[in-house]
Length: 253
Image (cartoon, rainbow, N blue to C red; front, side, top):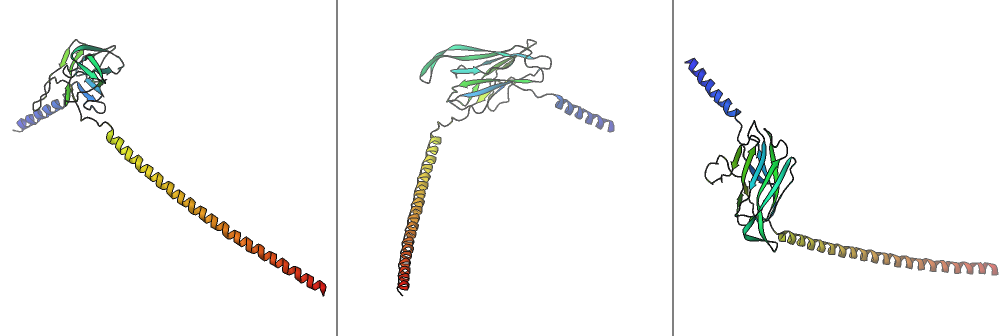
């Protein structure tokens, strides 16, 4: 009995250790650097992990959705990689800033100049895109990852809501709500400016009142001093006249 229990415990422990030792599978994903708002521009980064321990990732192909064409796609330079942008004619031209655009980027391919993404590492590939669709909640990209041993992994399965994640899911970019056009912010600024103007006007009135009060006080002081001076002067004159008379009277005696 004891031997059986020990064997069972050992088997369970072995399974647990094996489960912990198996690395979690990572996928090619896409995330915005900041926000990706509907109808706007954004910088998105495709994150590519290396899932092999005996080969490096040397090539990445990202296919853009044909039903959501983007007029502007500009990859950011990545050290050790060469980017190639592929454009295709559109069945229906796009209107961007009043101009008709008859072609759009359908694929971006990165090819490693050196070792690529080695085992145990990942690499981000940033891209500036726009304008994003205004009537969609997400964009699905298809990615093809090529290894140095010629193995190719196709991340092209579209995840379905309510179902388990597929083995090789395609990168999905979730779009956020449209950003404001700035009118609200401008109105707020205008109100703030109005308040600032009112405060400035009030301050000017207060300053003027204080200046006026100060001026009135100065005038009053000047007047008082003037009157005092006149009185003192008159008193001095009177004293001088009286002293003169006393001298004259003494001399006559």
